[in-house]
Length: 194
Image 1 (cartoon, rainbow, N blue to C red):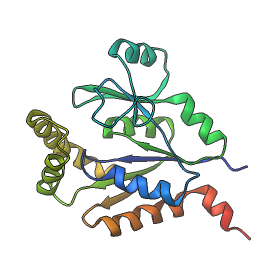
Image 2: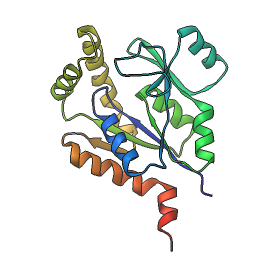
Image 3: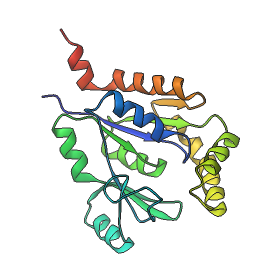
């Protein structure tokens, strides 16, 4: 059985990473989206173990000190991390693993897993990003301002990724995103061999 490949998807908050990943998982149910841990509060409709593992800061820091995260970082005033063991187990079982993480975490993963495929999702503009963030209605004004400020900095990192998908038209961006996955997945390529 072929080992899976790690896909690192990053980009500013509100760029549409989740929508692109959702379509990929719909088309390719054998791909697996890693569930990150965070110290932030759950948003309405989120539950522990589904969107995130919601942890107390002391528990998160203990896990980090024991090396239980593939990557972790402080983002928007909260801690976020990718549990190492579940990712490694899925890869070894022949699943492609998708990480939806921030730029800091993506850099850590790239150091540890150099052959991970990096995909950066860009919003069409900062104005559109602001409209999307405000439309979500999940962040305070201060959080929106912080996310926009972070987006300006994060967007500079796009050149560090093998692929950049500009999410200006959702249908086109989904097709481009899934085509990248199809091209890079060793599991899909193995299926196509005669």
